[in-house]
Length: 250
Image 1 (cartoon, helix red, strand yellow):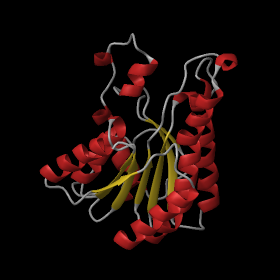
Image 2 (image 1 turned 90 degrees about the vertical axis):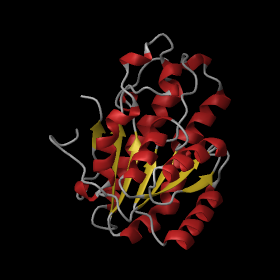
Image 3 (image 1 turned 180 degrees about the vertical axis):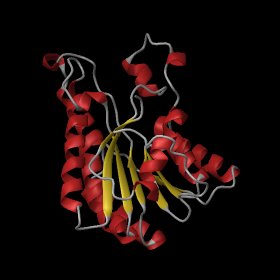
Image 4 (image 1 turned 60 degrees about the horizontal axis):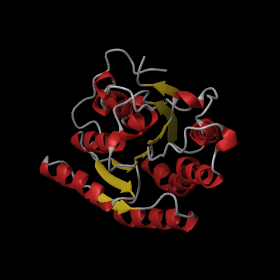
């Protein structure tokens, strides 16, 4: 699917919403966090590097947006208890969560499977798949408490078909897409939370530069170009839309 034609987000379309963003320190996560704050949301910034999160926090504050919060977490090392503890903290602070953007991921190795390091494989799976699973599971009750919660999982074109040399990254993204579809079906008419996959496509980020080092960054759109779709899926404009796969680039 794609963004509805002529979609224009209204000012403060996220007013009063609490939105959790993983990988909020850089790239798409950073841009999404700033955008959500500009449209009225209280944003919870999740990531490993506190200094990067603080820079995003400071920019949100400088722009006069609603208050943001920083929650440092190492997705590679976090276990289920860490996410349950996070849920307790968020419930104490906000009482509910209106949105969750699963964005944090790593690329891993670009090499044949026969050469793929097992440690790297496990690292990619932990960050790209196991962490989202544990986080969504832990935060689902808070999302349901919103009454119209929304989850966005970040996908990729390699989630739809295997591609040589993309290894654990492709496998993790295919599994995350499948998890998204399973949750959409399980939650349908059971809890008021929608969940969709969003494939940003080629975007000017550090990960993109790692995957395509010879590419001219000027030929790739910046994260800001995709933000209308991120706003659509996180706002009430997408109520009733769940289990879908969206492409930011057509």
